[in-house]
Length: 511
Image (cartoon, one colour):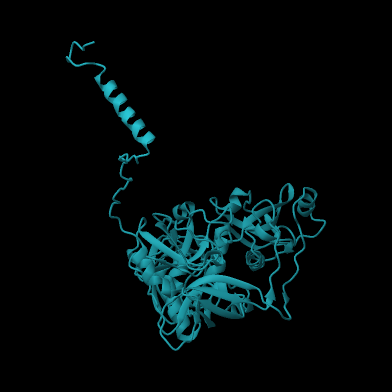
């Protein structure tokens, strides 16, 4: 049969195929080897685009980054998980057994267990904590966090090559959560330097190196998510927020730019889950460098002191005193015999600038004054009686905690900042029972929890209070015990009620 279109026999290909099959059969039956050529495709291969990586930076800086091992003579006590209202680790264990909140959580199954005080160990292996650090000089000075070494007695560092060295504590600065250790050796160490973080921008790449969960040298990368973050950890908050993976054990470790310079020191993470969620906070290089240099010089940090209690300027306050916008720091009370009081600063003054630099809010004033030296002469721009004037002040030296406690009514920038963040102002009640709320910031947690002017605060954490200092003492004690909230007993028109306000311990240390 012919194909009318081509003129070829349609069965010809079929016949050829049959013939080939027949020949193959003959060859197999004759025992002759059969070679069939293979026709396989080449494996997939794609040429990657030329993009920059972090390997060169990591290779250069890793020898300068160490794991910090901390040993203590105090046995840490396991903490329960807490329950409800964000109270964190210790729950309601300090409340009396017949307290209604404690009964409620006991009845509904919350783990409320009494806490035992730490007890010294008499022998055997001592409890160990671990964090991170990095060398800032060839002769062995290294930086870490205060909260990494704060409870330690002996210290050592583990290099990236596995070498271990004993270290001594040079000094700490709890207000910025920084510490300096010293390692002595017969050779120089690889070290890194701080960057000029004024050039840092949101969106810049960064690399974090540290010791998460005690695993040893670990590298993560991300970008700068935000600058100038206030996480309610102290008066000098000015954190860099990054999204590089930072976890427990990264505390004290460096965050590098792509030039291998330290832009920040990893200190805290925001973590509802307890692990990395992409929100980490680092102490900026400009703040850390000044503190570190002071600690290396003599083991202490000297700060300028103005000696006034301050609070934020709200929209309402700005309008009431004729300020164009809510900027500056409002003086709620000058401390008696302080540099500010001697220079003529008055209650109700608003400090709008220092040496010509605009003060955006109360926190920025605390930070700016704290970075100056005792004895520095500063020019303050002050808004008073509807007009601006200039007042010159010679700064004093920031008092120690004992000195502050010895003088009734003195509170430094940290205490003023804490009261401002809670959003309340108080004065001793006329009847001697508790303190009376004299003002409530409408944008604060206190306002959202229902506190109003005229109410009385009777106790904090079930301890009676009679002054602002009493409140601060209880709140700071709660924060020091790991609590995120403090329990306030408030007397209202409808009777007594309990409410919780933040202690300033909202974020977890990364160490």
